[in-house]
Length: 147
Image (cartoon, rainbow, N blue to C red; front, top):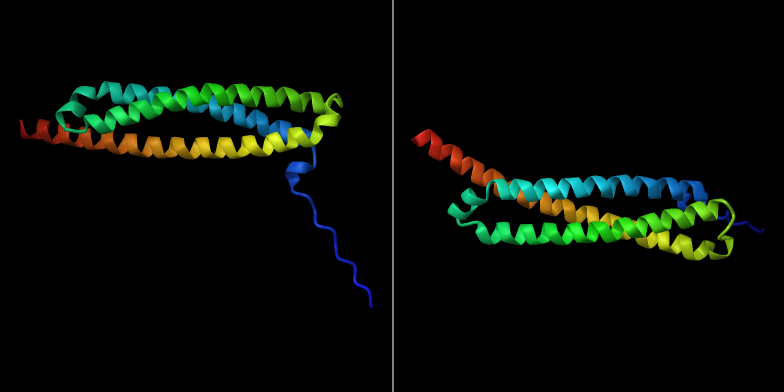
């Protein structure tokens, strides 16, 4: 008896260019917001720099500031790549770049990995920065209570 094997459905990401374009627009919003978060973290560390120096955590703070500056540079590059990809997807949706369909889909997959990695790096930097600032703030609070 012959059995037919049901065809595997392709992931949703391959169903429509509109879906890809919507995801790309969401990335743009997310990465833009992350830039604001990075600037906030930078200001937060700067705000507590004197206390950080007194608490012997200056090396950590300097490392975090360097990491934040690096992420800000990556943010600009990633935004440019995503904007270019969004334009390509818009043209693909209009039927202009149909011959480059596979290349654009592959680029979308690579960008997804980059965005995911970028957001994971940000989570790590935020966690470390908040822990450092919290430690400094607690130390300052205890000093004020003793005075």
